[in-house]
Length: 332
Ligand code: NAD
Ligand code: UFG
Image (cartoon, rainbow, N blue to C red):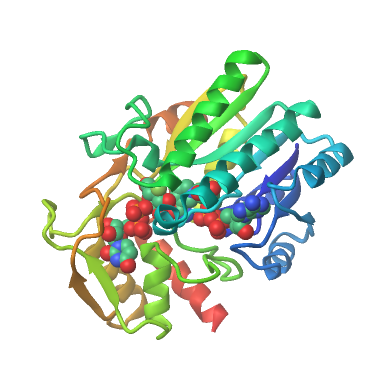
């Protein structure tokens, strides 16, 4: 298939591009490089032997989108492009609504104007808000008690996709709700290397391991969990990338929603221990107060993705830590 990947030089996008090319798909990438580097394209070429066409473009630029879509007839758009820093979205909500929601509307207009009916969208477990349970199935209500504008953009985009599907029977949107992506490609060529100060646990652990930050601050050890720290469902980014390939093979008209997670919860302290085991070094940390908006515990029930897409995770937290450390060595 001929696929446009927005955000394809980013963390999850780049790993997905590698899987798509390796499976024989023809890929083009659109990214404004606001949170990624152009050198990722070289790494993709080294890994796959293919240099995908790259558009340094912004999804807020309607004219540029029209130009790109008039040049090629895509079968599918896989839409990763978006801003994802939860705390920044609280401080600058309009930036997030503009970039994520308006950008997606521009993209959808460009698609529909050129007869592209298929989209795979990067959503997030955050759309479930605070559902009052710890194991998440796709049929839980969404949109209630979402604490950040970032999370609300994901919910709003899901609703927009549902409305388009109502108006256009041939339209197909596959909504993938990711849990917590971690790890790197086992080659060490690509991984998570965000521009600026990261917010997520793993890139912060990486900065501590690199000596850039003195220690990890663990946000609370008084939660009602096994060791008091929060529990999340961490998924290796290569497994997640393969989830997109599985979704691509099962595109059908209408809305399809899948949780992409491992089904297993891991605490922050267990993540620290796994990193220490893989690196053979102590990771300095201190316990600080809770972070506003954090839920004590969540994990995916990924059964629907297995049943309908034949996809499940194959890699472990230890694999993710090994690959992250390998990537850190390559960066050094
Ligand atoms: P990332 O920041 O590494 O990748 C996003 C890419 O989109 C970046 O390369 C960035 O430069 C690009 N981009 C941003 N705004 C753009 C714009 N206006 N025009 C063109 N390109 C633009 O993030 P990621 O972790 O790879 O996440 C990919 C997607 O998955 C995002 O939509 C994110 O919200 C979603 N998601 C991520 C996580 C996570 O924890 N990493 C969890 C759930 C959902
Ligand atoms: N944490 C720390 N210290 C840090 C950073 C994180 O203790 O410096 C803890 C958090 O409190 C949380 C866990 O590590 O318990 C994971 O935090 P992340 O920020 O990495 O991830 P979140 O689960 O908060 O959020 C992630 C994505 C969001 C997405 C959400 C929904 O970043 O984009 O999952 O599943 F919306």
